[in-house]
Structure formats: structure tokens, C-alpha cells
Image (cartoon, rainbow, N blue to C red; front, top):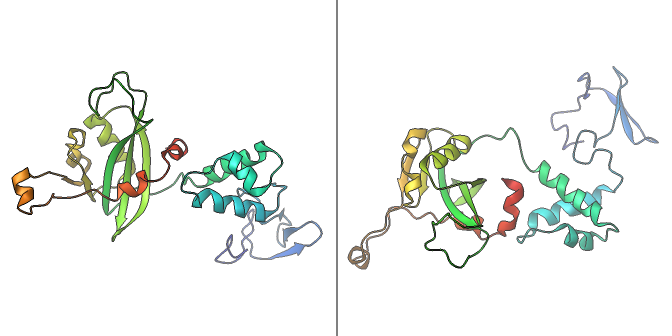
Length: 235
């Protein structure tokens, strides 16, 4: 009850603050409109037949396994009889972790791209699109202090400036500072109302003299170090 109504109880139907508990039915009933409801109604646990402790264990395993836990592994960890039950648990938990009304990123934001799909023989250069089966994935990482905070991940069709600009307008609020590498597709981000700092690499003689890059986008490696197989459900 403290988690669902941190500011005090309110009836889901009439918003009255008075209710009493029906012990045999494991429900609550509003004093004003006599509407009956359970603590899990309208949540990811709605109409569940499994104990909440199983749900809590599933949620813990889903968010702490760096490799991205599969339904088969979850079935073994929880001792479930059916694979479909484990799949349903993961499906509902993953949907619950996506906030449809989430706010865009702000502050200092790092943006980088990567390929998801592994190396492919016969391709010339890392930016060749023709014949490549891997997917292009963009990640935006919001920095608050020295630690990464919220992230946005999306699969994009190409490295064009219009694609990068659309990604920024969708996921980043106007006004922040965006740091990227020197990819040409990131040029023109000023049009999105942000301050863009591209990473520039000094010449070798300057590097030997101690000159450093203008900015190093290192936070996104925290994201790429996780199992990228999870990207298909957070995009």
C-alpha cells in the first residue's frame, strides 16, 4: 500500500480516502462507492496466480543479469514447470520497464553508434551499408556528474544527418550539450537547438607533445559493454 499510494489511499474509481479490507477475498472495498479492488489491480501483477515473491525474484533476475537473462534460464532459476510462464513473466516485466510518457534527455548527453550483428567477411570499411546484415544502433546517454543516468537506444537505417537529427529531436530536449565522435552524420546537430561538441583527434606530432582530444565519449562504452541482444526490446 505504501508503494501504490505514497500520499495516502485514494479509491481508483471515486478517489475517496476511506476503505476497509475484505480478508477472505483479499480485497479492499471503498466506503463511499463500495468498489472492490486489490492492491495488484491495474499493475503488472493484475490477475496473477503466482505468488508475488516469484514476480519479485523474476524482476530481480531480469534487471541484474548483465548478459540479459533468457526465458529458458529464468525458468530454471525459478523452478517453473512451463517455459511459457517464464516467457510471460519476462514479457510483462520488459513492457513495464518502458515508460511511454518519459521525458527527453537533458544536460550533458553523449551519442554514439555501433553495429549489432557481429563481423561480416567481404565488407570494405566499417561504414559500408550495401550487403551488411547487421543493424545500426544509436545510443544517447545522459550524464549527471561523472556517472551515466538515463539512456535512449534506437535502431536506425543509415548514418545520414537527417537520421541523426531526427533521433536527437525525438530523444533529447532542446538546450543541452551533445558530445559525439567525428562522424559526419552528426554534423548539423546545432539545428536541433543543442550545443554540439564533436570529438577531434589531433595529429600524431601534437599527441606526442601531450595534446589531448577535445572530448572523449567514454560513457557509452558502459552501455555497449552489456549484452547487445537486449537492444531488440528497448528500442
